[in-house]
Every structure is written in C-alpha cells, then in structure tokens.
Length: 340
Image (spheres, one colour):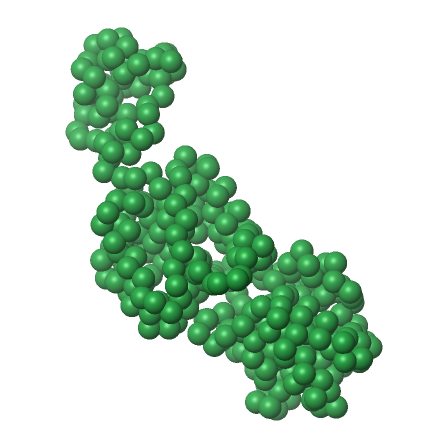
C-alpha cells in the first residue's frame, strides 16, 4: 500500500501538505491540491480513517441513542430493527462508524457531553418521548446548535431536526377504511401518551369519525404501551365492551396481535366477531391468523433518510441553518382481519 511520503515525493510537496489536502484542512492552492490528488490516485493511496478523524477534530462516529427498557429485546422489534438497518446502510455509504448508546427514559440524558468529549460527530435519537427527562436533553442540544436528528418523534422547537411518518394521515385512512366497510362502532387501542406518535394516531382516529358524522366516545379508548403483552391485557376491557364495538383500531401491530390473541382466548374470533386493524405493517402482521390489515410505515427509509441527511450536513453544520424536517408517507394495507 502506498504511503503518504510516496505521495508527497511524487507531487513534489511535503507530507504535511498531503495530509492537509486529503483531510480538507486549511487553505491550499488549487494547483497544489490537484497535484496531490493526482499522485494519490496514481499510487492508489488511501488515507488512514482514524488519523483522518483526528486531523479533522472529529471521531468518525455517528451516535445512535435508544431507550433502555429492561426485559425488552428492542432489536427483535420491527420498529427498531428496520430503522437501525436504514441507519446502518447510510453510515456504510458515508464511511463512518456507529456508536450505539442506551438511555434510561426516566432519567435526564446528557446528550451534549457526547459531543464535548468527541465521542460522536452527530446524533440520532430513536424512541424519544415528551417527558421532561427527555425534552431537557434534546433542548440542550438544540440550544448548543449541535448536529442531531430525532426519528419518529415531533418536538416543538425550530432548532430540532426530525424525520417522521405521516401518522395522523395513516390513522385517518385506517379508520376511514373500517367506516367505509360499514363499521361505525370503532374502538381505539393507543400507545403511551408521552409519544407524539400516539397523539398523531388519536388525531387521525378522531378526524375520520368526525368527518363521517360519528360521535367521539372516550369510553371506547383503551391504552397500552406498544407491547404485545399490553394488547393481550387490553383484551379484557375490549371483550367486556364487545356489544358496543364492531372493530378496534390499534396503534401498532404488536398490540394488535396481542389483542387478537387475547380475544380469541375468550372465544371472540377475528374477523367474524371483531374486526381489528393494526399499524406498522410488520413482518408478523403478514403471518398472523388472520393476516392483519395495517398501515405500512417506511421505518427503514426513515432511518436511512435521517442518517443520510445528517451526515451530509455535519461537515458544514451551522446552528439553525442546517436544521431539516422530513415527513414520510404511510400506506394502508388491507388484509383479512378487517373483512366483513
């Protein structure tokens, strides 16, 4: 493998000049820069990635912060695994590493220290919520003008970049589908209220009912925590209300499958006795019995887009000017669980 000295000798410059050209550091005459690049190409010289990072004052790592939830295998969930796959692909394409960091959702997290200690060059936050313990750390990053992005969580601050899905629209189409199929008594099993995605889904549910002239009944709202177990637990309340319900819209597939199983254990079959619509279009939704009508969310593309847009901006990041927002479309996928 060619060395920096060999490139310097061929280009007729010092090794320090080769280093500055390859790292993009300092003012360099254009003719000198071209001579160095041509020599590097001729000799097939590749700079050392670690040395390059130090020269630029950067770590070469993109931080990915996810919540630590005891006894929950996050990477077995469709939500996190798909987003991480997209993030990983973007990191590979940009030639940077990933530093995975866990946070306790109930404890304030010092995001800024990750940059201060040069552990990361940019930060992606997955599974963020609106609790004070979380918003304090995110606000501190925004105030410091640091390069970061939330994925699938809205935050009311102009200094916060975010890539989200159109959850309000997705929920609206899911509930409208049930109404158009002739079902007017529709319950809603939502996730925990501290997530903006839960509020978005509720807004879509209410809009579909209101536009169809169906009154909103708070008594038909049920709450889970996006886990399959919480869907199974909600089955008791849904079963007790079965005479008031034609269908239940559920805020994610894991809860929907748990609800389906819990109702079946009580002798209530889907779709014969109760129609169920999920959300996410996870792998499990396609092989559940019956296959689940659901809303497709492009989690892989969201992770890829967030990482790609952030990494593209890091070299010239400036507070405020570099902030970005992107909303990804959702799509209703109709299967047997919502049939008449």
